[in-house]
Image 1 (cartoon, rainbow, N blue to C red):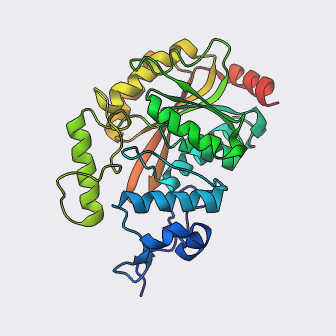
Image 2 (image 1 turned 45 degrees about the horizontal axis):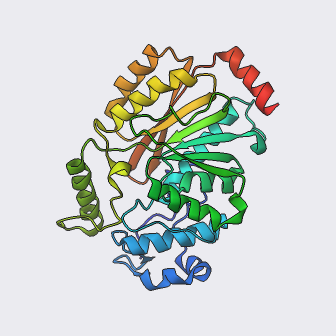
Length: 317
């Protein structure tokens, strides 16, 4: 008797990963996944989600099977992202654009997105272009991660001219040095560093392994937790997003919607206060969930209704 639900009903309605993983089909697409698949205690086929090699092969299979991304890799020690959750963010951003365009998706050839902290995996731009054909600029402070992201783009020719990468040479800034005076973006997306210190990040990785394996380890696997800049910054996500809000004031007319993930709900009160001080024209909190894990997207714009309508006509009309 299988006692797990067949649907991941908390995911966005358009998310192709709402069904449970069909491992035989995924193995047929990507044979290397097969060595990591076995029956779990419920009698279902699954992988060990605490094994970074298994998770990487699952990602490769998902990207090949659903998104026609034939080659994808990350260096050892870098963050291996959960594909369903990353796809969810993209789908909610499509909804946000539709709400500003009389309920219809704007012409995908017109949409340009800034991904802040694209990482070695470059997952948001690759998914966003594969699903909605949007173009992307991905930013990164780590040259090694940027090189790995570029390798992923070179290996998949469909992204040429659709996704470009920019290095952020000053890690004390987020948007400054990245957005140019003549840049126009319809969206920014961001998955900010979650933790406030390296020790906090390491403890979080150990807890994650414990939740998956049911036992405590001394440290997380090498490429399970991610690089330091992917997981933590001084002050954690609250300080990072507050800085992003301040910098967004300089580029208020370069971008329609600034958005970021917010992992901790208790941070919303201070972040909304920061948005009020920044005098944004509109803000939204978009709830997200993947299984028991809940998150949210904070979105804000400096464009009042008249400017929003002008943007829609000029950019998407």
